[in-house]
Image (cartoon, rainbow, N blue to C red; front, side, top):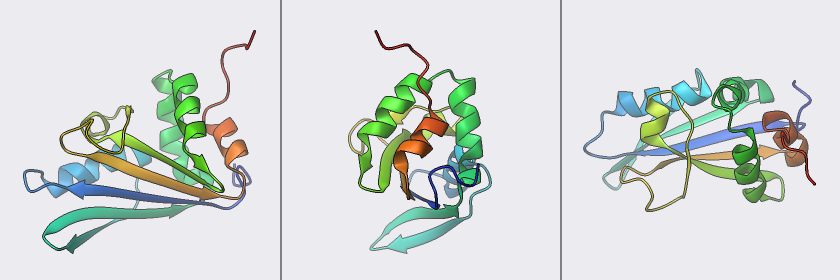
Length: 140
């Protein structure tokens, strides 16, 4: 698994709204990405959690959830759309993550509490996507 996508670095950013409990936001991220280290940062009156991890193995929980939820094809489309050079960017619904599920979202406006922003930098995004979300339907 460590060679999947070559060098892999995951960056997670999520805003903590004044109405939210920071620990619940932390739990939401960890239910999707496992025991990722999250730092609390406060700038100009707004708080966010920043997380970083390295290696494809840090995506193991996400990998398992994609299979458990049977959303490989949908995930593949979202991940492929998010590729820019050696970077894959996508967004997850924070409330859905809190209950341990995956729901992809838009960067703005879809969820009142804002999304979990995920950026994966890797040598070979295509092979990482093939590993995370392989094609399941036969193309005609």
